[in-house]
Length: 95
Image (cartoon, rainbow, N blue to C red):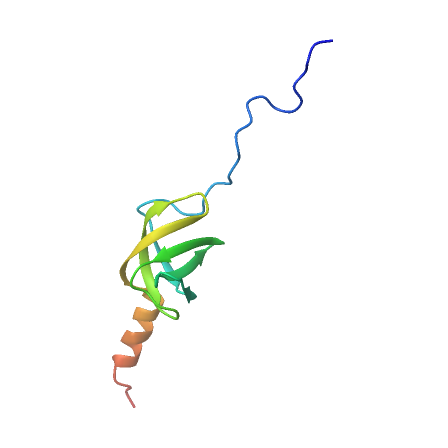
């Protein structure tokens, strides 16, 4: 009786496609701080580490590295929605 292997022979772990791409920019809100002091934001559930960011920051980031479970990014500026609010508050009100 020959030995038969059960299951798939060419098993490779499947990871879902990531919701981000290297080099693309995203507006995010930093939700918390990691043990290493980096800001943590989530983009469609994917944890993204952002150096020099703290909880509560609204920033525009560029993805620099994607791993199986997380991504790393750098800050490229202030988030557009916050920038628009800042500009609106700087304009004097006309009466």
